Image 1 (cartoon, rainbow, N blue to C red):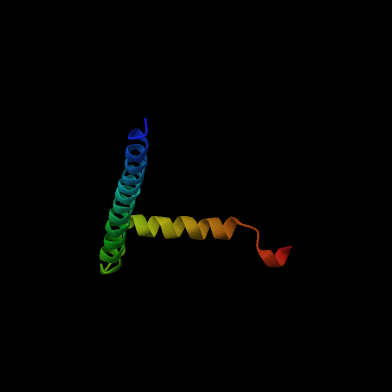
Image 2: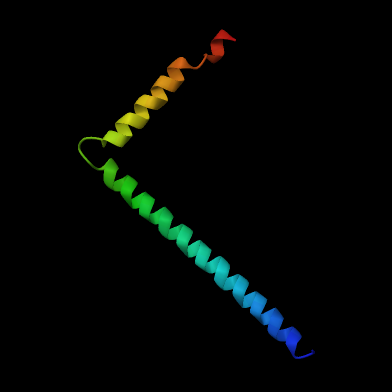
Length: 71
């Protein structure tokens, strides 16, 4: 039973480090992929349809929301 304890501790440490490291690597690759796509789309001469639709939705939501000065 004495030999089992250090193995468990090492297993937990390595498992935790590899688990967290892999999760961070996946999140970083997703972030970079989204960032590259955003930069690529921002350099286009005309904005993409998704961007135009998102801006229109935001403007409509702001126009329909009560203004702060009317409170």
